[in-house]
Length: 357
Image (tube, rainbow, N blue to C red; front, top):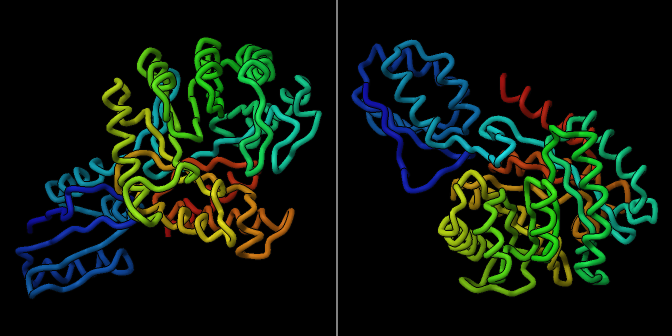
């Protein structure tokens, strides 16, 4: 029996298409039994089957396969779709294992938990400890709000908010993976020098100064398209985002980054328009972005579009966040940037357990 993967020009964790051919009648019976309730299949002819399945279904199929040569072919297909996010001090295999990327606002005016206590070092350390104990894989510090209508501050003030917190977290939690959310080159460089592993830029490293820092330091990055600069490649979200990130990814690769150092973020909630529909379209672009082969961030936690679209107010946004995050995991998103670490960890564990049945 021949086993061939189709559509080799793209990646994907949601839809992997495999053709089984030269199937004997006896093998067909065995194959049908093995494929029962795994993937979606089309009988092309008496000796050919087309199978569409998720990465979880492919993994399950490989575990049950008996013939070693055929199992190796299926394993080769699985390896082609493997997703790694790595840096100098960390490596996450995201293929089957989404991770929790916890938001820590070192700012008094965040849309969700803005308060003066966020500038207190003791409070920051307490939150960090709680997030790590609740299952956080990455801790992200942000020294400036980027919510719609935010009040800007100087890069110097932003860095002053972050400087002591980073030093203390590196001392108290030396093995933790730390990120900084900033759109300022001044802050990026100082954060990397202070031991930060990941730089998250809401503007997608859009200036020569930022790109020079990436080239000089080669940090792991999160590159976002937040929509505020308008469209450059198409007139709709679904065409714009894949083209934008294909070009942005190539630009970052040319600077010396490896593919596994680059995470992409669809920028949900930054440019809602009157209804918030743009944000929903960005949520639904997850499968298109996963096809590029980069780790895809899920960054929708408690954002205001949920009130516009789903009438979810305040704490009600936790439910809508978890609901959409589960769908985005199914579509290929793997890095969940969230406020609610404990609940998100429960979601991931439950989602993975469900895939085993």
